[in-house]
Image 1 (cartoon, helix red, strand yellow):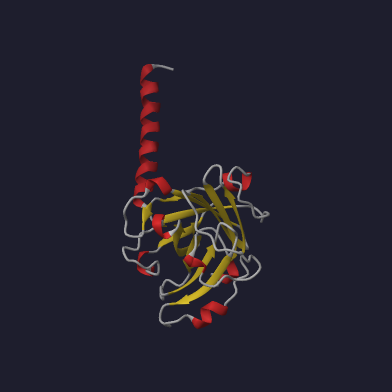
Image 2: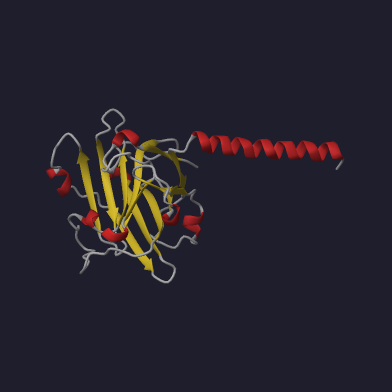
Length: 238
């Protein structure tokens, strides 16, 4: 290969890299959920073939937009014709866990302890309607049908999505993991297909009051997580 050809290939490679970087910079509020050909048993092993096929996003700022790199959490997503999957990989210093965990029934006010949270909605015309899913390091859970026009969300509490979840704490590595499998029928009236987009935000709360951290994928710039105006998007990709 002559010198000109090498230079040409180098330019092509550089331009391709630049294009990718520019594309990423333009879409910091978009999650690309990678398609899986079939549903798989739910796992929190990030080295599994299933999760290796996902593109990660990172929660590295608090809800007011301040960087918190020590607690930078990773989230991966995949989808099939029936379900939307998430894996949270969450570093921690110390955990705040509910005593006597119950993984068979919803845990009311689970958000008072450590949780990973997915807020997701399909109604772009009424953004104050969306679903909330929470999983703790102990695999406790809650799902809610949120309507911000209703002050106490009474009906949302009794709603049941049928989502599945699992979690694991690696105390030696100071990382906890949570995985969710959410039926599309619980979050979208459309059949799942490539190109579909939903509205989404991701959150992580962990640690006792003396060392408490709350991370947001899209910072709300308010004390509340319930700010649908700042939601990003999740796109069902190849």
